[in-house]
Image 1 (cartoon, rainbow, N blue to C red):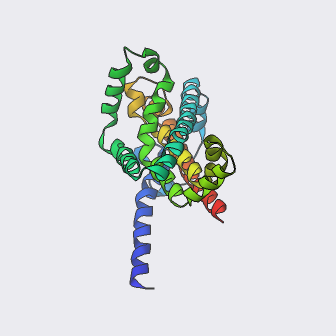
Image 2: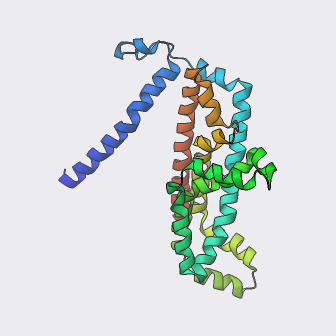
Image 3: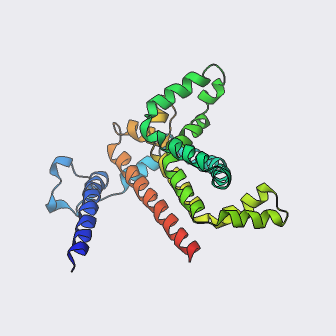
Length: 262
């Protein structure tokens, strides 16, 4: 085996073990009815049960918080696409300077902490639009901003791979309006990027804790944080399910993208 290929496989194994070992430990804690201090290699296959997960699923508080997070995730994905796809398309066609501004704006959530974002949001709208603060769906714009670094880059790559000028000129020359051009020409050619951006928005919302905590909204991450004191095994079990779902979202997006390209 070539040294470069050996180094590549070594990095893959190290990164894989870095994620796999904590996941295995978390799995044992969540699904084995054995005190943590007694967990060892000798009882790896003893007293496994899914009762903690079923107990959490049967809790009405879990169901309400999970449904709220799911609706917030869907709303975030929809609003992200409605805002970014037309805006980035116009920027690609008419203004390279606007593209640079959008790219700089998209990385700001990496710089601005979530607590500063929430404080500014609450201060700006507490007196002007108090309903936006009271409603859980008032968090959707904040989630859109939080997911922006991931969704923007995905959609940017999708637009950059298209001969956008030719597609739009052909559509417009055939009499299509701008809205029909976006819906029936641009969107079908960006299905892989749109699917990936949607899945990334979903995973961000399902795992975001700070915004919901500061605004006192009982989302799924907030429920899991509070449930650790009463049912720690169940909260860890649900956390594992969320990890698996997030990995499934990313895998589905990659498979969907490859199928569309082929």
